[in-house]
Image (cartoon, rainbow, N blue to C red; front, top):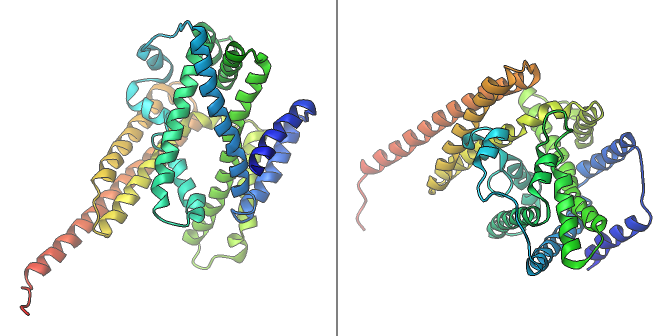
Length: 375
């Protein structure tokens, strides 16, 4: 109740007393916040912020559902094609592998694997809860995706969608958040008579909720990773490098530098491949752990192989068909580095898999050579 009151009370206050800063000022404010959130224990800021923020998400999903039902009763005219594979291929590339590095969160995501290790594991009091959390998150992500698709299809004309999300050259930049916000505003207006700007702002708030949860969590993960990297690089790690505030400051500094110089836009196109490469690594790690404990591995090993092959294929296609012809040296270098990492990852996986197979075989042979004793 308190979290709900804080979440929606903040929205109410924001409507009546909006706060406006220059983009650079917002960068400084957000950097200070993420530094504090990444350095303090999870339960101090991250957990209560997550719990408060999720009220907007749940409320937004409920309102989307109500809006869709209300719009349906009033009658709708959908202008979108039932299947538009050619459009997807035109803008993103071949369905395989590009579909599987574009869709992530509700299906499989390396970033979400980091979330599980860095924050979820510290908040789960019982191992059996993990299944409910994992499957529940997947189902909620899938439901949200369906709600967004229906909202767009019922409340934003297809030609307007193309003009906003996939504009022709020289007609501006792609803005999918704007398309979603306009669809939500139009849907609420048609279903309930609510002013369109109110629904549109609420749609943007839903997206912002996802962004802010990703922001402070990802900085925390970078802090963890840096602490582990120092232990690999140094035999005796200097105490300053193991200080969580120092590592959080490095992470925030990198974030601020990329944002202020706007250089993150050059690296963003390759994010999907990076994310799914981490997903493949996660599945391989899980397979090794399950195998070492004598548990079934078929439900992780086949997805691991699929994601590894898919990620390598996507990197090759992007490198050959886009980055090299465009002489985009930053993305070409990043794609080449990721390809080398993917190949190295595959080699390590085969080596460890063979070692585990040999170990299991030796154990089996040792067992066959020692007949059971009779009572």
